[in-house]
Length: 311
Image (tube, rainbow, N blue to C red; front, side):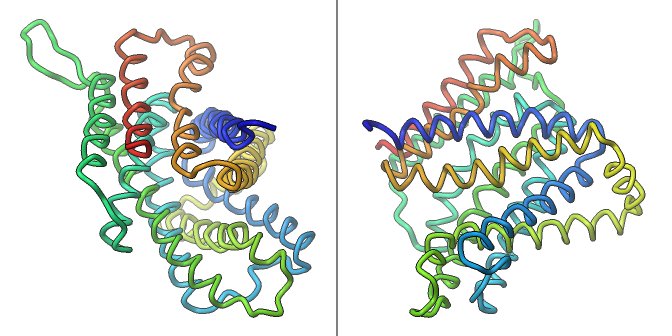
């Protein structure tokens, strides 16, 4: 079948759109930290079932101390910091604008890859980053009657969006280091499926550490009673189940499958179409008007991500 990798990449963007919409709903209903604890706990259980069925081990088998250390760090940066920012960003400015800031994640990942792993970063990549930032600026900046530039969104929401993109991008690079350590630790006589399922086992480590990190934060802020109330909220648990299935489980699985069939840059660009896909369902659900300027901003941002991989 022609273009199967590209088709899967578009499906991934759609699954992440569903995740963002239901994460927005869950965050408003039970709070961002409770939503994250439940999402990551449920993801751990689902990933354990996948690993058990595929490798015979319902846990991240063969992972050594270095793998755990780096993947735990990536969880603290990507999940605890990044997703805390993202879910609170949803509370402040909604999933539509929150996902727009996530277009910063691929360029930030490339910069972090250059700084941490010594990966090449060309001047063309800098141009692509500027295009992405320009798209975000078009969407969130406006000129008032006095010709002064001002934000159309709360500054708090903008800072949280920037934090979410930063956490996602840097967390991805740190997880790459952890996965390399994990791969090196797998013995030659391990089941063949173990190398294929390595990203899932790595995601399970990150989900465990992320859930524990959010639990610690909730405990420090004396918010644990909210978690109990959230578990008893059937509607909220329905939102959590949907966003977990379409996010860490389906989204991750399909994104890994996509890069097996097509160039990683093309796949990443198509997966970054979530801010475009979310515009109209979000406007329909929340009865919000989308301005031509916002549509232009999203298109320019996604074009920036595309340039980043195509140059």
